[in-house]
Image (cartoon, rainbow, N blue to C red; front, top):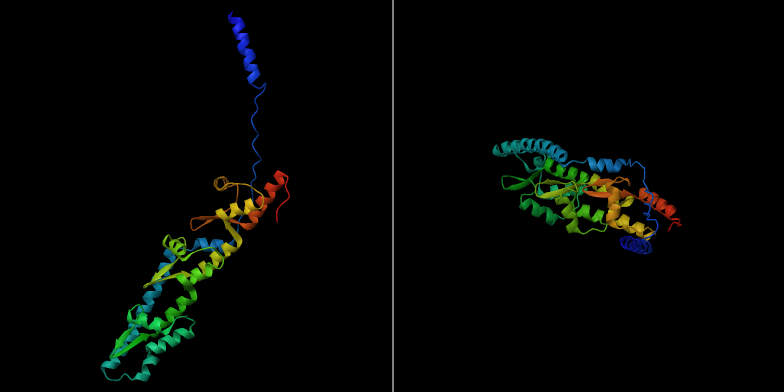
Amino acid sequence: MCSRRNKMVRNVMMVFLPEKVTTMPRGKRIVIEKVINDPVVSRLKSMKISDMKGRRATDEKALHSSISDIVGKANDLYAQDKLERDRLRGMGLFTVEEAYDELKRGGVSLSYRAFGGRVERRSVHSVKIGNKRLIPKPVVHDWIALANEYSSVKQAFNELKKHEKLNLRAFIGRIEKNSVPSLKIGTQRWVPKSAIDGMVHVCKNYHDVGDAVQEMNARGIRIKRNAFERRLDRNRIPHVKIGGRRVIAKDVLNELVSKELALAGKSPKL
């Protein structure tokens, strides 16, 4: 009786189970072995806020020393009634109007009203000798030098948004998180022009993760973002990390798409 029952069970199992169970083979792994050697990206990644602050501290020390020397001599002459108005400029002291004209000649884009407001709020260093408000020449020339090396936050944003979909609030958030190097001098924050040039270069030659996934999908490679990020985590796709964001060079992505399409036996979409 038992043997008959066992035989019936075996027959039922043979009906519902396949003769041989096989596992699906894993797809071939595509590994891009391109080495990213981009000097612009290297310079951008090597920018350190601590170094910027250190250089600025040295510059400000020399600036304060120069201002003290000029103002000290002017006060001595004023006390002796030997300070003539014509001598002020020769000593390195500008009136507000002269300082503004000097800034404009140096390439600083600013309205006279805005400049006067900064002088009144003391965000621009000035001194009062007698009853006259004067601005030391080193202050003006330091501002011109800063404007040649740095951009204001608004100027930096306006330049970057030409190449990247970005709003001002998001850009300020990057600055606050130190993803974008910046330096605060007085009440104003400055962004190095070399950093802006580097970020524009990245926008033109690299994709961030989201754009890379969209580009692959548009060219016929169906892939989810988390699957793409796993490939980055396993270093199967060369990439660089800039300011907390991973970016992929466009030529690397083109090679990846070509290999994926070749593996799938598809012709590439242009």
